[in-house]
Image (cartoon, rainbow, N blue to C red; front, side, top):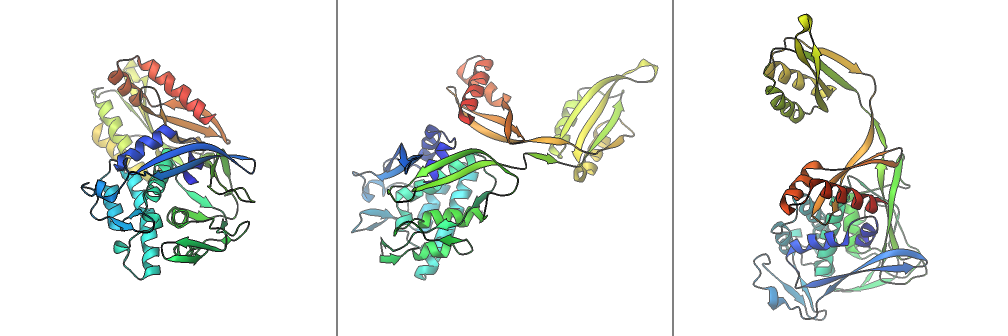
Length: 398
């Protein structure tokens, strides 16, 4: 349901599939993605299926799997937390995706270990050790990275009711591991005598989210996505996610450092720029001026946060010929909220800078270096890559 909601919110299906291939588990599962309508609500349904011709013996020789466990009556391959961690760590996924996925699995291992009186490292996962849950959790991390999500808030959680059948027999809803993971969060039971929150879903909440009764103050929603569940219930069996920004504009207290230079090798300015940006400068530029006796010169200007002031001043004195500078307080600076969003073009992946003000997108700019690299690799005009990235990103954001 989370993957489906993220896809409807803008994660390209092909991108998700390509990233999941980095787990090196293609012979174990297939992922089917379709549109569904639940009680009149259009949603995306993601179904991860274990391949019928898959057997544990088929992958026992894989270097990234040390131990496999089969639950005989279910026919599933089960792994310990150590197995899963090894699969993720040896994959080609980005470090950020690995970190997020392992954080989710870690809280599951801790909860399961507490319930079954075992150490987290040796917990043998059943429901959450099956390949569909591995794909779900790693896919969750991939989607969050793609959407550039910095913080997650969750509302009151409907856990359902009744009993659920699992590897250990009939368990009350919420299942023990789910109940453990949802400590500290607000829950309720409504609409179905079914398990409406699984250990996997509860783990995502526990590891990454914090409770918020309503949408956070000053939150501006830019996209809404719905992920469909399998069952048809009296209530809409969907997960709704809002993607957006908090505080579409920000106020920061900054300074401008300014000095006139007329006796320095101009080649040094490029090196100086790099050092100032590395030290945390917000912006650096030079302006051509004329000083006394009509000597041509450059006025160096540096915007910096107050806490980076001394570092930037030190660099300017050390790297230039100036013997003094002006420090100007900037009373107010308004900024559009900005984030980097990836888009898959016909030439490859391009990052785009997306800027929003007052809850509305005001600018989309493809990253020059990404476009240049693809233009060189594909031997196509740079403007073709740039335009394709801009068009695809606009389509994606609506």
